[in-house]
Image (cartoon, rainbow, N blue to C red; front, side, top):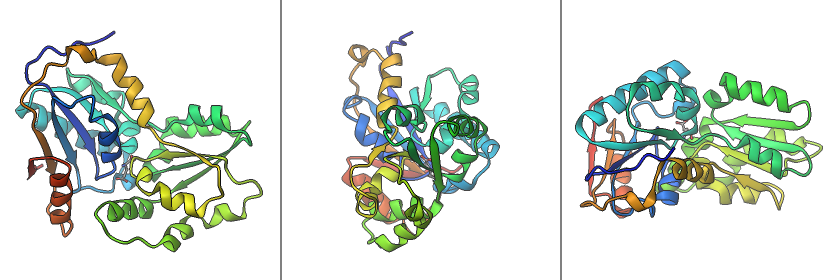
Length: 270
Ligand code: DGL
């Protein structure tokens, strides 16, 4: 069922633990070219990949309550696989606006693979999630699913986005166990929104012709189900960024978002 947006001030809320959600923002920003966008990076608790499911659910409830008290949120997008698998669908019960999220595209990988060996890169919390585990165990009967979780990779992706040089060998080390595999995955699920940021680096260390599958397209499908694009009413557009901690990268982060056209960048005390 489509929910029609009729509020005059439409605000789309995009969430990630860090900067990975920008890969989703870049993909969908044209749909929301005339609506307010709030991007929140919860850098106080970054990375989420080593937090428990319950911690993440409670934290998201707190953040969404605070934001929706001050802004008329029309839609929240969890641009973070870890946050989505940890909090959906439970979190929907707490709010009256739609909440959607990116999740690893395991089914798509099954359709794509030809050699039946699939690589699955995600955070520890995502891979440990009981629903994801169940799915992997089930699929392991027919396919070989090789999983790797690495918060190092998440940090490297953030560093690259902020303009720091990253060393390819550091990435290679993370995948050492894959280089001894008899058959290398021909399809790799990028089950974390940070990983598309380092896709070129991954391509240089892995064999050629691998399909890398991220969650961008599946969020578009979810959006299509709830939005009637013709009904999005233009408003005086504002792009706002909230961060939750001042750290040594904060000036770089601010500069990054200013360049992207965000005009208000401020700390949310939470
Ligand atoms: N970007 C997040 C994801 O998609 C995770 C990064 C983190 O560990 O905080 O899973």
